Image 1 (cartoon, one colour):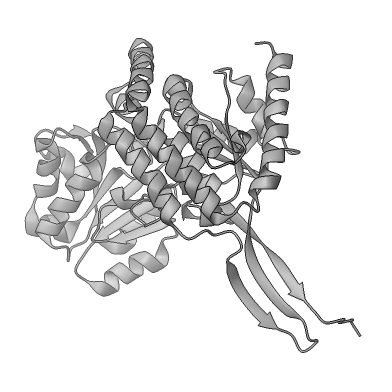
Image 2 (image 1 turned 90 degrees about the vertical axis):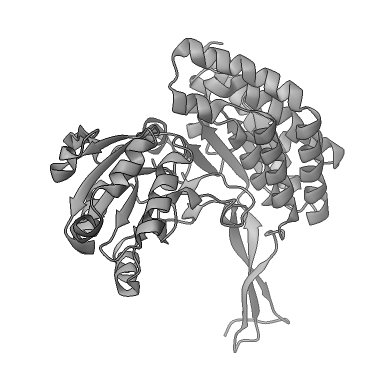
Length: 420
């Protein structure tokens, strides 16, 4: 497609999305719920089609030389299709955020004022390899009464199309417009550029992917953006950490799934912990097959690799972790402030005052005490699913679920009331 054709395609998609959003904004909660449940059924019924489409994407990924972590993000099997369907059912079961009263009060003038949740309108979601984002984003936008334009990564082109067909089947079964959830039907990168300029059709852009994608969107978008920066997540083992809890959490935070944004990328070990317990945390990681890029004394541990300065503040998304010793919680905090991405950090300690200091003095979207960074997930927060983890400070922070995809308006009632 040439540039004019892509522009025309995107303008048509935008116009249809805007028209669908106007109707979806007041769709009954039960109708949206029925659409999500029907989409979940379609996902499961068509699982073999989805897995076959995914096989095409996996073959394409192998030809492109994608790494193991990226291939894991891309891969779908029956268990992952089932998890997508369950995610849709979980979103369906939630209370509908649209119309919910956030606050209400009376004024001496006789006015009664309510602040109520209202849809954003049209959401544009630009994402990379993970095809499950198609289901999660479509479901959450629908629940919040928003039309959505999905632009998946070229790696997941066939998988996303198969999943999208199930979402539209759900909309149709419930009597809603199929245009409420649209998927950009081209791999052409010019479509992304067009989306970033479509201020007349798109109300907010949500980029879901690596630093390159998010940086591009933030630089070039004329549409407001929910920032979802890379997940440079830290785990700090304090001197007062419980050894067995620390061993369990550190291994899970790094190795459960390395390709997700909540995977730990840096381990900070307090010198007091190291003096007491030695290299056990590093040795556990090495035994699990993790490449540990260690600084200072930790680099003397057999099996580690000396860290370079670039290894701190890097999102590996692989079986690799940076590690260093720190003197106390304040040095850990200073390191995280310098190298972190305001995503997710964890402290391992039995000292409540130290944990509270960590919580107070860091401003990442998610802070955890004695728990794995892999809990940085909307499903684990009870949101059913998420569009991503917002690391900015405006409107939404942390997991972005259906409620975070609404704005609000004021409904003001008087009785012939005039202003003096």
